[in-house]
Length: 215
Image (cartoon, rainbow, N blue to C red; front, side, top):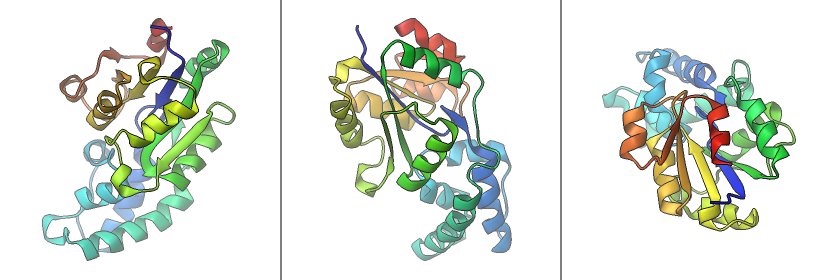
């Protein structure tokens, strides 16, 4: 297939943001006298938007809408300030993006992180790489809903079967399947191989350079 575009997830795919997210959430939990979590636990809390991350991190007795909202708002105040303190590209990502751009592919980012933070992080770490950077603006369009992904493909001038979608979670693979993109699961991210396979990954890669085999 002659692919024209590649759409990437952000957290766990392009960047390792685990420490910044986990630290911001843990500050809120500690201030609320709730148990905190290690970074390994946040591997499984991340992926469906930061409000969901907060909800997953809270103890069961605190999982009500009012408390989730309060903790989420407090976390966002911290994370918005500190979202690029420790967040860095995974090894080999920048070189891969350079090669994709050199081959004329259109590149984009689609995240379940809020739109403003997605844009802030992606533009700070990867200036001048992406045609579109899109985060979550409307809850009903959260991945794995393919609506925004398909709108992005159209803007990039690519039919769904000309788009490669790259992500590290089951939500990402489901998004690709729902949009009829080619689904690539990365094994350096936050979720295990078994989850990626079960949710529709068509290829699995262990290093960014392996993505180039598709082109």
